[in-house]
Amino acid sequence: MNVNQFFEALPARYNRSAAAGLTKTIQWNITDADPGVWAFEIVDGEGRLVPGGVEKPDTTFTTDAETWIAIAQGRQDAMRAFMTGRLKVAGDTMLATRSAELFGPQAT
Image 1 (tube, rainbow, N blue to C red):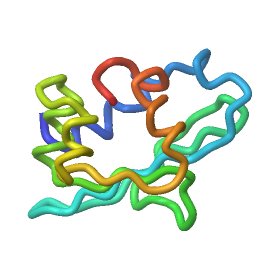
Image 2: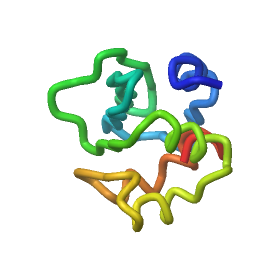
Image 3: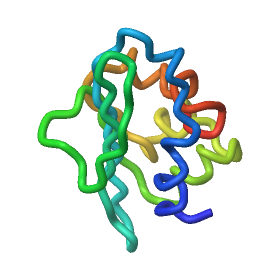
Image 4: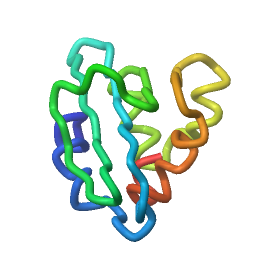
């Protein structure tokens, strides 16, 4: 799986029932040789992928593609990546911790 495939598959893994009543935006900034920005907007529980991102996300994950794919596949612990500086989180950290609930076990 590469980072583009991960984000293309993200809407299919979205757990609408876990997001009931939620209006937030989560964004990913991938910073290496294959850089990109993707956001997922949730408005009253309805979600949509936004390639290219948004101006003011509620939570932003910043990392390289290798680290994010390892996290998504369960080969890397997100908290360990955060504690070692390989994953940065800005904004609403409580929303960041809900990402596994919102997108299933492969989207932590």
